[in-house]
Image (tube, rainbow, N blue to C red):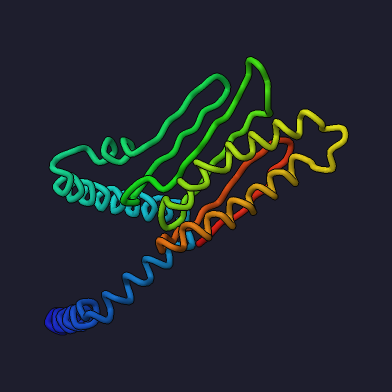
Length: 209
């Protein structure tokens, strides 16, 4: 009787080892545990997954930072990145621009004010370069001064004028656009720009070569 029992237990042990230690059984067990955890412990699983992702991102970021530091000769990445900035502050005006990963700064800005004499409305221009700084630099050097002159003339006889701030802005942008196309296409300079200027409302215009 004892021998039969031992034989039966030995047989059951071999059967259990045969089935439980098979790769298919272990795989099915893992799937079952994952499903059970997902349906009955969703919040805990999400927390673990999120923590794992954050850890992986942190490791990747550290590796990228080390590699970047090597390329920059040991300079701190953030200091090197944020040193490529333009900053301007004057009275109630402030401008801040980050070069980012571009080879050089493509954006331009201009501020024309006369707070003391108020000979013309204040002009604030942001010239966002696209694919190069040529267009932004050209318009920055020409458009604000042209607007200033025409706005001064407009202010002198505003009541009898058929123009408005918007039409003056539109006319000068189109005029600079034609002028720029004539001059810069000769030298095959290709760039784009987005002008944003505001008085009581904004009037955007994209100038491209």
